[in-house]
Image 1 (cartoon, rainbow, N blue to C red):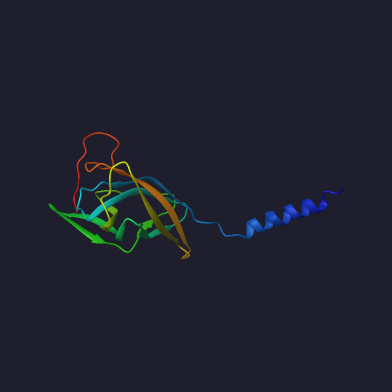
Image 2 (image 1 turned 90 degrees about the vertical axis):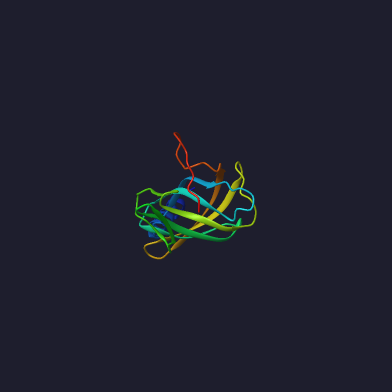
Length: 160
């Protein structure tokens, strides 16, 4: 039995693999959602995003809320401000933190209380520099009301 046809087939597969464009990948780490109290209609989502190529976070969706928005928290002197942003730049290889003191995701119009110890499903939409979109499914654990994202030390809450 000759191995030539197998070798040719493997060579063709290798060449086809080289012709495919490199797929941008984004990793998500330390995702979490702040728990809510009964009747609270909004909460924050936090995480660290790292993209392999220049990309941007262009959307987030979750079945637990009517509306999901990406926000930026700013300080102007002693006054905290918040505004919705269309996207968050994700420079290649650089970890971008979404935390209570900067960029973060808001779940608004919650359908029910978000309780500590549960998980919130999220769908992130990432767009690379060429306009190709990738969706990521994330299960974000819910942390207590006083969680600030740190792994230790004192904790405090920033309310929306």
